[in-house]
Image (cartoon, rainbow, N blue to C red; front, side):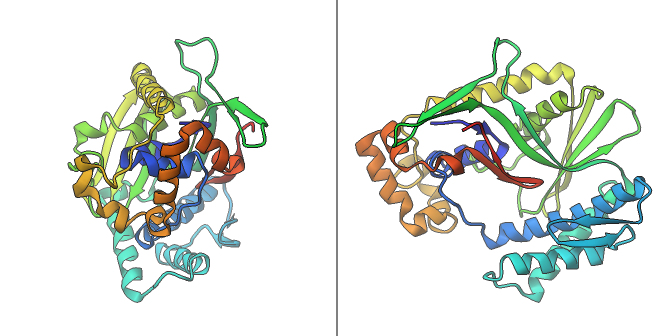
Length: 341
């Protein structure tokens, strides 16, 4: 498989279904957002507005502008107002979803769970904000290798595309802690469980110490911010147990590199991406196809899978890859960032 860049959702996609990840991250086929995920995005946006308000306040400003909402808000904006603005934004962006009062109450409950944590520890208005929606884009250069990793691809017209493999993502919130050499990364999760979809088991604190997302973002933080030596990495599960925090130091960089490198090398070696459908070992996971996969519903999964078996991954990718799509990053904080294609 091609890997123009690595992001945590690419890793999650491979764990969920390698073939689905191939369609999305190699062919560049558009995937649709489901309603439950959008409600989570809505809560994230409301928390982002509160964090931006606090950051502006720290910089002695009275107001701030949110480009996505297209509005300027006072730093005194309340949590209720932030949620309403995010709700209105989501309804404008996704009018096809069946928005209801019950959905608003769900989002309100999840947000209140976060804001109501003891001592307001995860309320951005009560934290020393360092950065909000921090986008990163750094070369994939491992310490034991002389050069950064590269990718290349020849399209159906014979044109070669190439560039550095990049590590990319967006961090919801970074907050300073009492120690001057410590920063905390905070990500809000609104799902009903902490389930590891690759194993079916609920994640524990020990699991999070090996979690790819946390190690990946920790590794990025060490490259972006040399002034910090200690990194608190927190996932806050609004419906599934509250905060889980892991502490990393620069001594953990080799561990993070090993995790990222293993994922990269394993993904590059994939020539026949497996899919859940028709896989006896994953028969209990068929609901991921029938209920949660746009590519299954559209028929793209079946048609592309049959053709890939006939042509092989190189020829199939050459015929169908949308280079502009698969070599760009679309995510929070910054969108449509092109690789060197």
